[in-house]
Image (cartoon, rainbow, N blue to C red):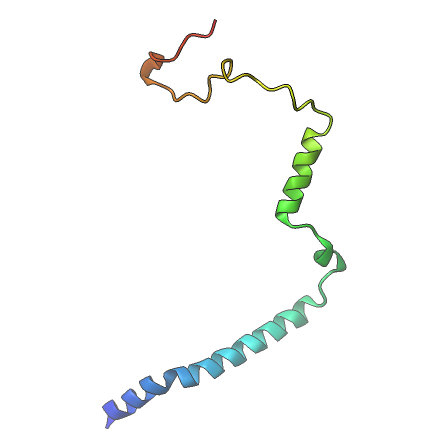
Length: 92
């Protein structure tokens, strides 16, 4: 008899747990809203992280001459480091 009862409980578990989880989530969200109160007005007007990053980059390059770049012949950091620097040309 117990095996039949447990088989019935197992088969009907999703039908019982979903409404319980829904009610718990609803009560939790309402409780969180009640404790936090209304969101501040500035939270809706804040910029996203990507927008803040773009603004910071624009401020960094403002006033710089972007046509003056280091030549790749002079810049050797892009080359992989060889063992004991044997294959790396000497900078003169």
